[in-house]
Image 1 (cartoon, rainbow, N blue to C red):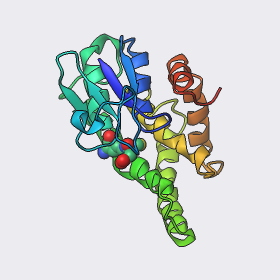
Image 2 (cartoon, rainbow, N blue to C red):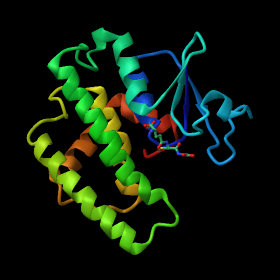
Image 3 (cartoon, helix red, strand yellow):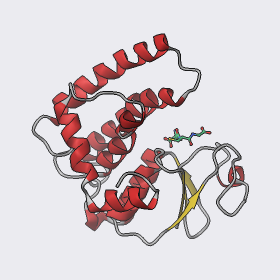
Image 4 (tube, protein in one colour):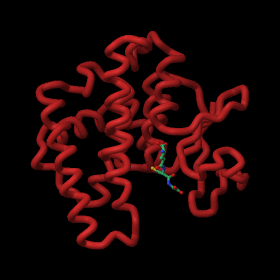
Length: 201
Ligand SMILES: N[C@@H](CCC(=O)N[C@@H](CS)C(=O)NCC(=O)O)C(=O)O
């Protein structure tokens, strides 16, 4: 199994899940500008969409899209308890979180990487993100994780919330989110994933 990634990108989510579930895997750092794999291969031949992450299975199948890859990883190792069983109400709640993270948080924060972002655009984005953060803050409440227990949704949410540090977005108005991020950063699998991507401590 091989994960195509870029340091600190959303590919950190499947990277964390690979480690949480104790998979054996290889990492391949993608040059996103040149669309080259670490060995100089054509990344577009792996994932024609050109972005990370992509997970290549041992039979050659390539899976893309964060929310899909992490569900695949959780489902292959059900005993690790990283996702509720499929077809249960809890599984749909998990998918609700994955979709919310993908479309509201991931893409909401993703705009801040755009070098063409103007101050007005930034302001508008911050206002919308603030509303999503209000919802997250309330949902987390006194819970340690989105679903109570740790799940793949937390790995995804953490990977993208981590960009608030990069873009100097102050989350101190949302103490539950801040505490969630700090708690996640202390998980051994998260620390290992971040260290191996050359991030943080
Ligand atoms: N819909 C995709 C989005 C993935 C995505 O946004 N990847 C970013 C990094 S976080 C990327 O590789 N951007 C470079 C590019 O689009 O060329 C998913 O959920 O996996």
